[in-house]
Length: 451
Image: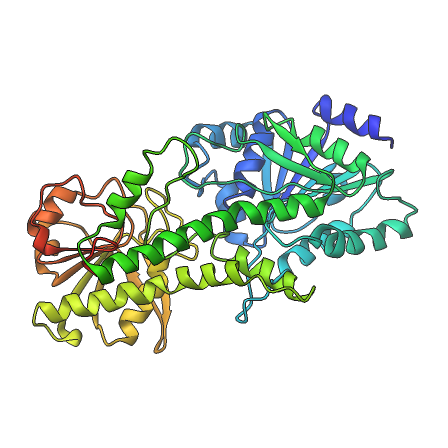
């Protein structure tokens, strides 16, 4: 099958699309292809997810319910936990997790597994696009050899009979302005033909596609996006701690003032630590790769460590807050507000709340609870073992009963005026109470000279 034949199949929507990994990246992408009229199959190792999708249950908030139900009813989108019929897929997307090991080295297990599954069904006329955030040379160094070995046995040549590219995901959970369809993406193929056909496939669901010369460029570009945020957040986190040490300076006011400059500055804000799938992990993907070339990414690695120190800094502030109340740590009633990693989402991946709660338990706090309008239960691991908390109802009684309120995620749904009125003491890591009238003495603000 020629490149022109594949383009015709895509253009006429006769191409069948397969999405491996139905999480925050894969499911929105699958639904978008189905909405555009493509028969789309989602693959996931979680039988529970597959059953839920088959029953018409949408578990990703960023996928509009009406979109999901429409493609579910039409039959254009189906999900399965095996690869039966995968040989019929024309366009494969790999959207699997890319975690790090306990030593902070890349764990490409899921990518390898997905590539092996595709290799078992490789045929002429197939396109494979890796979307999982990873380090440069993953596409060509891991995915390509696995699939190419199987393709050669069938007499298939990369760039002529089958095609491979990298196009990094740009998902921002909870962002209603930029979605899968209107967020520009980058595409880099292993060969020019691979780039050409991959761009054409992506353009069926994405308005703007930017071509680059290779998968390595696209892979590095994705790391730059996220490390850019990591480094700048680390900068304001470090300055916030300095403001606390000095006293009398609010880092929040400093950033607000600096943001009036119409050029050369972009505002970033301090917080209790980084969360989400990419930003806490990507610096370590790059530093691991750099070591293979006898290069030390000192600046980037230090920034990552600065951000990782923030949960410890917050816990120290909680301990001091409890001490100021004259309450023993073991008797202190601590209520955490927000365990999602960012405002107004249910995504708890690598949330700083996980580390903060585990450190509080390790420090001897026994009366811990949390409230989050988007998260019903939350699990974390302390030295004493795995724990799971159920979300508490947030009412005046619960606020008044707490010795210390710890605001970690500034959800819009929180009744800030009531909290400020009823709380004894608040540790605010997000400047969430800035616009609410309150007694300044009852709030310890991160970066406000109070921590």
